[in-house]
Length: 146
Figure 1 (cartoon, rainbow, N blue to C red):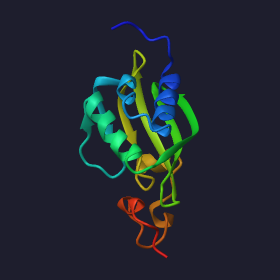
Figure 2 (cartoon, helix red, strand yellow):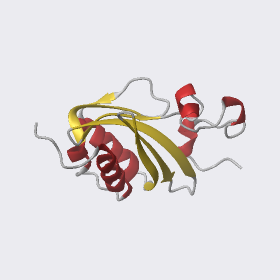
Figure 3 (tube, rainbow, N blue to C red):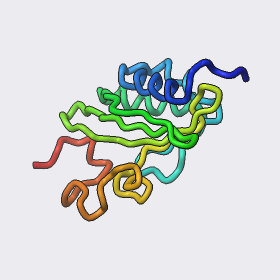
Figure 4 (cartoon, rainbow, N blue to C red):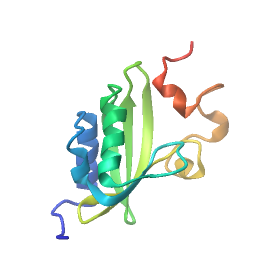
């Protein structure tokens, strides 16, 4: 594989931009063939660039979710990003993620659960002061409870 002219930070920025624009078909070009993706709250990774692109394409394109990039920074070989996912329901989620990039392609991506230890190290809230009673990561695809 030839080296990419893009930096790891550029790759993550371009990937999130494509995701936010609803590009479903073009996502795989940013992912290594053997890439692994872990969404917030998932126990097992999704493996394979094409499969990850399909899952994210359905999740974001199929639900009308858009992505706003807040920050991207490279720290010791890992790319840390923060984005806002704007859901069709009107809710906005702040999501922090850690990715590794090799030769201009993402090899691993993890969306951090804000209540986990790693999520707190990346700036997420402590468990005892998260989002109030009854909040669950899966509740974001439903209308907000009032």
